[in-house]
Image (tube, rainbow, N blue to C red):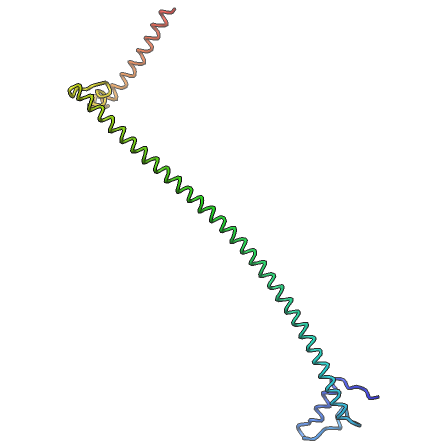
Length: 194
């Protein structure tokens, strides 16, 4: 029984048989030298090639599955990152919608307040016009004379010796008279009861 050649011996034997320097086989240094050496060398080479092809196919399968597993892991990481970014975007979108709704509500409130202010100003102008018509009508009845205390008070725009407007001084005097008059009346009532 012949012993099988190892891969190194097969490679050396192939190189010896295909000696390119001399164009003749170098049987002297060939590990397969002997009876039917070429047959043993070719069978060993064929076995070695088949073994290596099988190993290559096995490694390619392992590599394919390893790459496939790696790609699946990368895909899972990307999907997780995409989900996180989507959730962040949804949160930002939700906050934006809330802010937009709040802004719109504030705009509606502001428009309502402006409308109320405009209506109030309109009522104020109407009241002033009504007062002017009333004053003009009362003055017309009295022949242009001052018709009441308010008209007399408002009509006096002279300045006193102290530099104050006469109508301000008159107002203070009248308030004092009213207060002293009320106190005198109360004292008189109190004295009558007692």
